Image 1: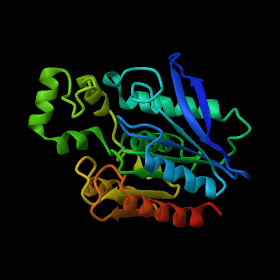
Image 2: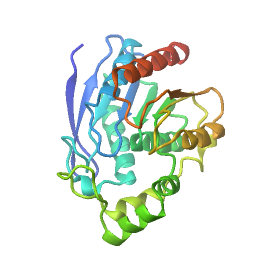
Image 3: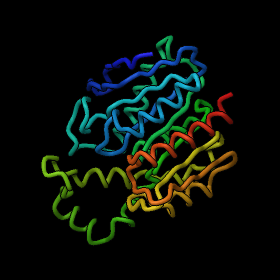
Image 4: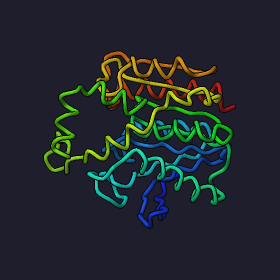
Length: 255
């Protein structure tokens, strides 16, 4: 079925724009979140959405507010809190629609992975399965991997220096907010099946961070490391592996 646009208003009267891929005979629904500075059209999110639809699960992808996509707000104001609130608001709106059946699956990349994980920890009874991909695990670990000098410079300047010169610098308040979140604190609440994927050469959310979360999880759980891959899983061979991993996982848990 064709992809449809979804436009809704969140709790702050801001516009959120998403895409809906409806399964023909849906047996559940999934919300898939991009990471900081990402967009709903990213190839890895498209691949994940397609696999869910092939398993008769309707998929929503959306642009977070304060991002670089179609939703309201400015990237410089992005926070983990607004990612989590976006997810809550999208779910509240979608669950009123007949095309968004239960059970609920969640998936997310990087900061979207953390938002999905925090939601699942708060509402384990509402989430059938969780797939945090190259997920941020905690603000503290982010600060650690970035390094003291990087963090000091960001704090002193008040804004982060971005690799994209056309993108406004992320405010230090983003890091202050991120430091409030730690997926390890309530990881034992994640009693649902959890699928984790990370690139071997990921320097933002490295394998060692993923292992810390994985160790806290109950079964059934899976952690897959894609050889040679960075944080962004965008190369054709990496996307093919993501597709294979997700398909096999859903074969096991979504029947």
